[in-house]
Length: 379
Image 1 (cartoon, one colour):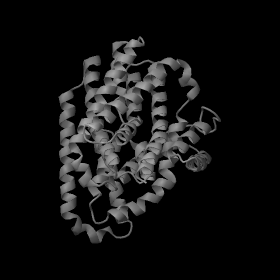
Image 2 (spheres, one colour):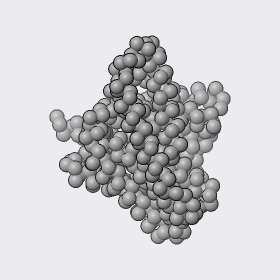
Image 3 (cartoon, one colour):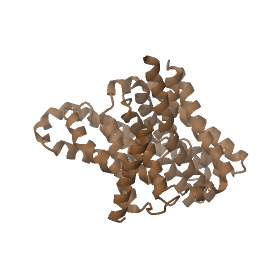
Image 4 (cartoon, one colour):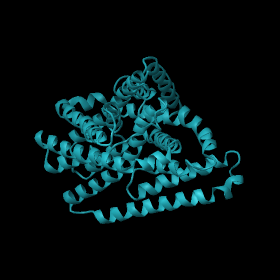
């Protein structure tokens, strides 16, 4: 990765974000479109690389960590039953719909099951930034989306393990469940210890020490999450949640926000656009459109309709469903794994990448409109 390319990426992200905000859209949307324009799809002047992927990974981890820090933990804990039920709907329905549609369009059973698994994986980093821009991260809908996304991640991993075991005859579902339970127990104990002994370390957390310690904690928890086959972004979010009630929360946010939103997160969102070679992905357009439709409707119906059972109004339910639509790195990791193992074809791989792109672009557009209508209705 050359320094000039990085300069182009940051400039394009800034211009894209500015233009999007001028049209009353999320900066995220502008940054992704900027990536498409400067990437292989149009101008072909910048390409995704290992170095850029690394910076983008740091960006999404910081974004989720800050989201965790800003989470109202009382609201988060009180939404447990509703979030779990919503997450179940958002996993089961896309899985069944995706599998059925893939079989209908002549995919093999193995491919269809794997594609259904890919559609279960929510990646709310896009939603987080959009909610953040609108000061809705701690709204009832925002809290529900965040809690449901964490549970969705765990359920998705269990389905992936089950499907992989069925297809390959290998893998141990019980082993994965035990790992997840150990991780959850470790997170709970860590949270208890942080709250109990935070005053003992208060004097040590002067200057930038608190931010440094927080980043170390964030990256360590992200690493351990990946070790038990949970997404790193879930570990980063939980790290933020565990520190959200500490005495140095505000100091940490203040010190991390600027580098995160000036540099790392624009790189992450622009890199999504860079990876979208639209010309190649449009080759199997009918199959791609069917899967994109299932990806969007599966989450809106699976999460949105179930939200109605918990006394959300229609606008709030639509916001929850739309907030759960984005697919990201988890879906790409799963389809890449399927391609390497020979389970899915290049057609399914290309379709999955296109699906990730579309489900990334759609939610910021609609969430802005949904919350704008809500604000208008309250006046």
